[in-house]
Each structure stands twice: as structure tokens, then as C-alpha cells.
Amino acid sequence: MVIPKHGERISKIDAYLNCAENFAYRSTCIKRKYGTVIVKDDAVISTGYNGSPRGFENCCDLGKCPRIEKNMHQ
Image 1 (cartoon, one colour):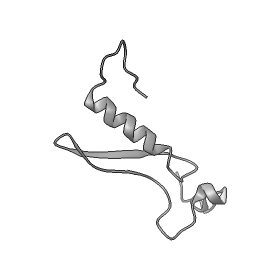
Image 2 (spheres, one colour):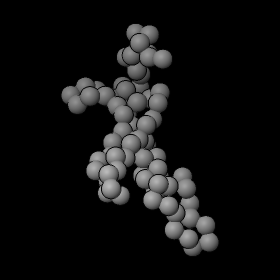
Image 3 (cartoon, helix red, strand yellow):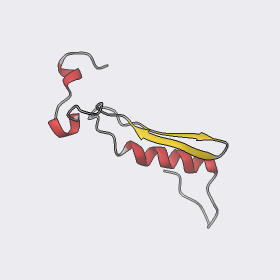
Image 4 (spheres, helix red, strand yellow):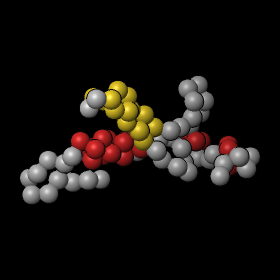
């Protein structure tokens, strides 16, 4: 997390990276946590994080990863 120093503002890029890092905490994957921010012309278009598709149980709720159990996760 980038933190401003001496009352200065952080750059836009660092602000977007901070946002992506925060969204990574919403990830439902127990192995890897990724967050993303899509920006166009200095406007946030979308945000997101990785996890199970809609309609499937989340690995964090199951306490295990079906892909790891099937040796499909690297």
C-alpha cells in the first residue's frame, strides 16, 4: 500500500494500485489473491478480483480448493 508522505498526494497510478490491492482482499481464492482496476482516460471503468464463478461455492467457504485436489492448480 502506498501511503502519502508529508501531506503530499499520491500519484494516480499509486491510487489505482492501492485500489487493486484492496480489491484483492475480496478474492475468494485460498491460494492466490488478485485485484484489478481498469482505467481509461483517468476514469475507473471497472474493478474486480479473482474467485469462483457465480453459482459455484467459494474455496474460502469450503476451506479447500477443488483444483488443488485434482492437481490442476499450479
